Amino acid sequence: MTYMMSIYMLGVIFGLMVVGSNPSPYFGALGLVVVSGMGCGVLMGHGAPFLSLVLFLIYLGGMLVVFAYSAALAAEPYPETLGSRKVLMILGLYTVGVVLGGICLWGGWTSEGLWVVYDEFMEFSLVRPDTGGVALMYSLGGQVLVLAGWVLLLTLFVVLELCRGGERGAIRAV
Image (cartoon, rainbow, N blue to C red; front, top):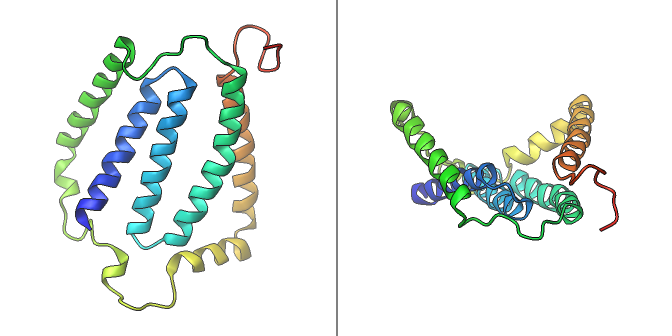
């Protein structure tokens, strides 16, 4: 299980580097899919399969549809690919930064019990902690739900502004 969690974490880091290094929205969306899938794998490994499923469905079902729509409005005739020289240089710079950060913080990551997953402690548990947390969020966390809605609305406007092409805005004749 430790190997699977390590692969998931490396996938999250690699996906974030792809999102950060690529100026084209098409390959940025590919990096977001990788980050979402690997992050849900990390959540499942730590004992939150319901939360992982909800995150995966909401994130990929909602935000990537908006991202794909706005990327279609900002279509480029020749987008930058993952193998272009500029993107590879930025990706290499990010890789060096991640390796240097990992070397600086290595002592704090090797503590005992860091990679222990939830399911190794309880064999046949009927009560999952993630479903109880979702119920608590709906019962006592109404303010959190309103805040999450505003954050999603703000994210929508940020994505539309980032994918805006030219000088006429996102709504234009294609």
